[in-house]
Length: 395
Length: 151
Image (cartoon, rainbow over all chains, first blue to last red; front, side, top):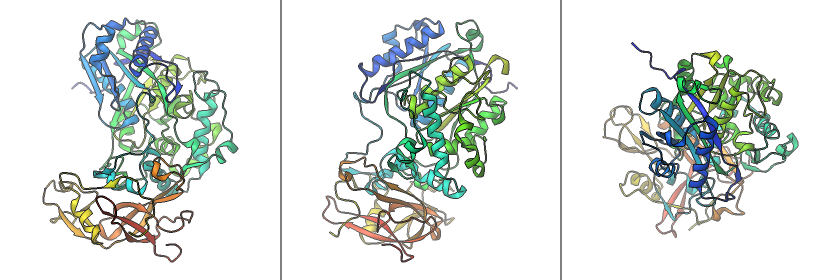
């Protein structure tokens, strides 16, 4: 029987981004940003844009594949995919779907993309303006729980309570992103370093999250071109091979709005998902050289790192010290581009790109000789997803 | 209408057109707290579903439960994301577990000083907060610590 796996069969051939802007500041329509990111990824890969035959995205991206294929003049459309649910949790899922389409013969050249222009459209972190509300939201919004930070704060609060984890752990995660952003000229927070004092004195958003525990909201677009491993070896860039990927959630994880009812409340919901990813990849946490872990909120990163096996909850206060999280030589370099907190909130696709850059040796905070590079999509926002890339040497 | 914990202007909860959650919203108007239970197995579930998740049968029943619980988790909100809450914070949102009803959990505000210490595991009791002047009228289940420290 053929082993069902993506390992070594598909690779990232190209990555592309627009400039990153503060939210509402993009000078162009979202669709144009999307096209420009895709063209940049094609240029990076050395692929003719007309040869793209598949499109994959997540979080109900507004730029649909038929429109993109028409605008780009692609020869034909063979794969059109939207990862259902999960918001930023779907970022690695879109990558996995693209890889599965290529491995399964549905398409040859798939672009994963995400575009956001929040001036043109709405913002995420605002409550509903409706007069009446039904369903799960009716059980939360009337109590003033109506934004992602407010929905997820009790999950982190419970986890920190159960394992006696202090605010310093969240602070180290935030400071790692800001530290790496100072080396990255693309980062929105480039030139704006964060100190311990700056973190401690920042206002609460919703406990246990200070301002710096919460992601930015930004405008821009990002795109990633995936092709078969064989084809990637003939293209311009050093391929980043997909080793393993997984999507999902554990038992009865409710909607974001009814998240309070989820039996395993104090979780990022990677317990089952990370296990499947590692099994496919045939590597474990000790093999990982560098991690990009989606920071919607630092408490989600804390739980994701635990659930990906990097340390036990009771070790969190020792492990989550800034020096351990910094490139080039920390124990586990984390969010080496600045991530959602300090590079750009491109809904986590910028983290996927950074994971690829680490394997190419192109990061602005490079981990020397990185061979295994992990990219974790939005924690707590199920279905969550995670993907791990490897260099040729790992295959 | 008695004074509410949060000011008026937030979205008003109403049952869906399908009526799935209507027994809950009708119950709390009369200060009765109801959740769902599987009549065959006694397994509770909340929020409401059309089907019993443990036996995949559609004979879900609504049962009254004692309006008490313990604080399972919480957050204190400082940054408002709705116009009705500008200049209002902080306020406390608590996740309350009902040990006597299969450990189902509900959300609410913790009444009393918004800067009070919140203790996970502390016992709480429900306070039915009636919004009789709203259109349509509704009732929220709020929570008050029962250890004598707050509320």
